[in-house]
Length: 256
Length: 208
Image (cartoon, helix red, strand yellow):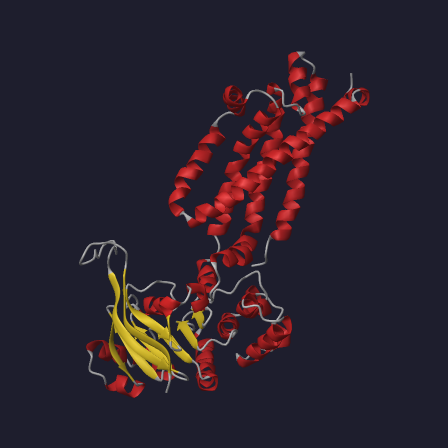
């Protein structure tokens, strides 16, 4: 399997010259250290970890909202450093928990944004928007002209996913996309997302702190702890893993 | 002498002063917007500059208008352009502050999503931040315009013309009709500007 994403020795230290880092102010603190993994087409790597374990920072290092202080990222054979950051990000779909739909754009305009910036023709954009809304389970005729404030949380995140897929990027980064949803919508979207993964054939990195979600959606689980990747393996391997942090997560998933 | 007969007998002069007053306000508020909106945007990109710039603008705002005109005379002399300069100084603060507040107030998640999708800073500003901040920016321009209409009356004291000419003349000769002949159109002008810009402001508001 050809790797869509390759991450090698990735590290990020907050600016500041104090060697050990200052825990109080965060100056010079090492947030991510020596993280390496690769993601193939059709594969979903779940980055699991507590708050502050470095999973969101890792995502932002991949799409260069933060610039790594060590290591490198390769997408489809091309190194990040060789590409201008905005061009780089257009090859990567990005979905965040808060969704971040543009409130003054309709659903259709939100989904159309990156194709529009890429200069696609109007007919091609219109067709793409309808396809994508269908893909995420929204009736195009009903939703295309609505504004984000007229949607439920689950519908908003569906639009968020459609928008991230708009320019057909090979890689999708998702940062706790279902974290803010009510439990019923969450399960519904998780189930549909599972169906999408296989059909799309894209590489995905999915950040969550919900171990059940991770086991359900991941083809592999990467466990992050203190800025390091302390475990990487299949969900089955994760369930049997003996790393104390993995054990703690499994225990939290199955209390009693 | 009644106000009506005063206007009837002096219509040419009155219309000339109203026009002059409008011109003073439009020119100075326009210039303040051309300088103030980009300056406000710049402050959202350079957070360290925010306190000094807004602080300085605040200080200018607290100088009594007559004193500011007085301070500017030795530098710029008397006349129209001195008044315009003083009015620009007054109009800057509300415009810079509202532009900063409006742009900085855009939901951080919206900004992060936009950047994460690969929008350049210019695209984010043009397509997202400015449209979302438009009504707040316009509210600043509205305040600046209304303040300018009032402060511009003082321009007459340094030979800039405008409706202040009647007011100062009326005060000097203790003639209420003359004072009202300047004050009433100035007040109406302020109300009209407030109402008209308020309408535009509401048009620019996006639904939440």
